[in-house]
Length: 224
Image 1 (tube, rainbow, N blue to C red):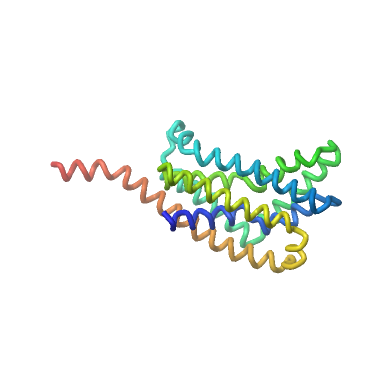
Image 2 (cartoon, one colour):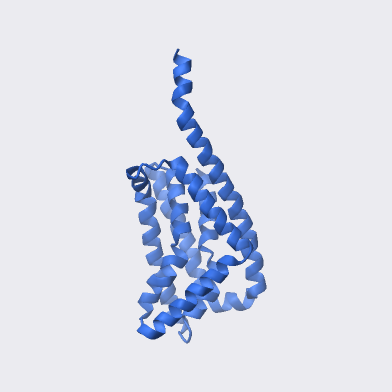
């Protein structure tokens, strides 16, 4: 279980990409004091935690209701995560997040939204708890269906978002320390790791579907 939790943490951390969120967070909070930024980061991470924890607990039930097997979801989720890894390697994800930030800033200026609204959108959704993160927690939850496993998944989500909160709280300092070059190098390395994990998800999903389809036939032959 420890290996699964470690893989889950790495996958979720790379998808959330707190280092990549730093320039977006700075762009969304111009003129705010350090205290206000910390409060905003805490609110955004709290909302994101609630969303991801909810999907971790009920995501499998939703899949079963829709008639989607865990193996099929692993394949689909793995392909989706591979695309995210590809975007990280070629810096497409940073461009997309920057576009979201620009749109949110423009919307904030026209509608005079409060900080709480920025915490919910676009920070919590979709920048932190986006489709990729939701898929990742459902995949991890499906691999650990026991009560202890589910509690461990919630702990992984909490640790990931605590790390994200720390990065956002120290956003100006980290941004000046790493610079665009440092962030780019780290994002590319993490993107390669995520792509490899995504391929493993696809392989596990295909294996699960083959076993599910061929298992009854093999059992019938053995009994005959």
